Amino acid sequence: MGMACTRVVERACAAVGKIDRAPTRFEPSLDVSSGGVLWALPALLANGLLRHACEHFRLPRGYYSLAQIFLLLAFMALSRIKTVEQLRYAPPGELGKLLGLDRIPEVRTLRKKLGTLAQREQVARWSRRLSRDWMQGDPQAAGLLYVDGHVRRYHGRQTPLPRRYVTRERLCLRGTTDYWVNDQTGRPFFVVATPFTTGLLDTLRNDVVARLLEDVPDQPSAAQLQADPRLSRFTMVFDREGYSPDFFREMWQLRIACQTYNKYPKDNWPPGEFHDVAVAMPHGNEVVMALAERGTRMRNGLWMREIRKRSESGQQTSVLSTDYVSDAAAIGGHMFSRWSQENFFKYMIEHFEIDRLIEYQTEPADETKKVVNPAWRKLESAIKSKAATLARRLAAFGQIHLGGQLSERQIAAYERKKGALREEIEELERDLEQRKTQRRQTPRHIALGQLPEDERFAQLAPVRKQLIDTIRMIAYRAETAMAILLRDTLGRADDARPLLREIFTTEADLIPDDAQGTLTVRLHHLTNAMSDAAARALAVTLNESETCYPGTDLRLIYKLVSD
Image (cartoon, rainbow, N blue to C red; front, side, top):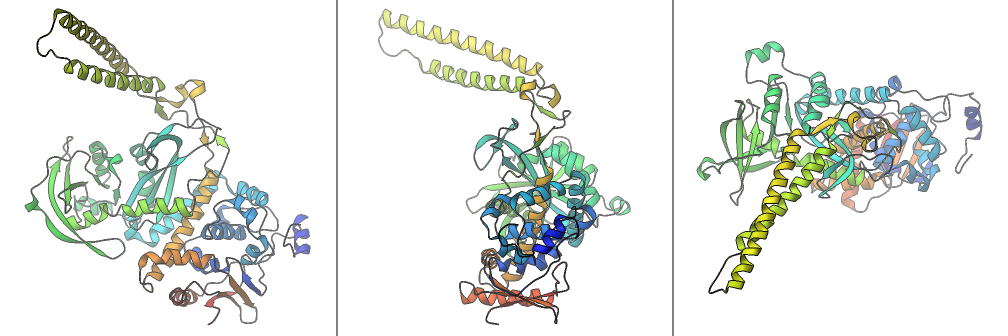
């Protein structure tokens, strides 16, 4: 029955369908590997790990319950076990003790159960319901939303996914794009994945805005919007990829405010217009910025606010916004807090492996979706190549000149060289104009179904990734909540997450007391006295939550070994 199996009778009963699931039962255990991850359980439950799960998911009768599988996946994320395959090298009995079992499932068993859970409609409904809960739990944070795309590279050979530009690699690589929606502190609400390269604006129009209109809480009523023409429902912040005056107008017709960098700023403003302003940042600190504001009319007639920040070197960064209510300092703080989402991407790549391929299967993509026409792309590439060649020939033509006393032979050679270059330049110009005419007559985008058979692509099966990404979001939000609790007890706020990672991977003793109805998680000492002191302060807050371990009546008590 596998290594570390001690509940032989229960496993035999589960195998023949005599029990629905194995009961969660803890036994006294010392020095349990990664036992400190149980310190995250109150935060995981508070962020919805098991909330609504039984309403949307079902597992067939067996040894492992739905709650135990979800807890295992969350503990894996926080313990930095980044893939299911890495469980092959983890002690199954030690991790089983964290679940109140004898051992965790084998890799193939866990993959099979994930396949059972990964049903499109169930995962989508559960994920969206959690997103709504998070927004309703913090309506102020949901009123300011950051949207940005992250390219997930694909190195497989199952399907020729289209290439897209990867900023961190500075290369065009095959992959898919995940568009994340976060709050100002970087906490994620949801993610939309697409194999197409239609860009941020298309995803906002088709997948994000309609969902936000339904889910964002505390939106102004129709009467309030009519009474105050400057009022907006909520604000979306994005980078220069989303710059589009037509899109800004389209969103304002829905009374959605947009904010982004000005893609085409005009001349610098006089230094005298800028004033030092204290700007409140997401984590409570203040930063002094030199800001100035003007109004600007876009090419389509839309009137927008333009706020500029002037650096010490004199460089000016321009921000455009249709938020007509907030002051300039607030808009500056919102725009220059985009680093929180960039930090989120960096942290999730490094610690939660959001780039890793989870599912190897593919499924048909929507053949009505527009993609770049290969014929247009080929013409575009040829035009750029011809234009570069023409520029070099023109430069060479301009550098040829007569100087001093020359013989008739030298003059004849000069005329032949100049004439040959002129003929080549004229040929290049005719060829370039002909290709430009062909490009104008060639549609830039066509439907996926119109592509040649050998250039069509499928999409990676998205459901299992969506399930794992949702659990990773819960784990990240839980870790963020615990980091906020720790910041007041640490000398440096940046030490909070490293300390939590140490806690999650530290050994702990598990001491159940059925008479008192408690389960004590006694954490071993950390690397230094300061970390121990911070952990003790965190334990006080965790104990005040009076969290019971799921599936039992045991109230969790947290302490250090010497307490």
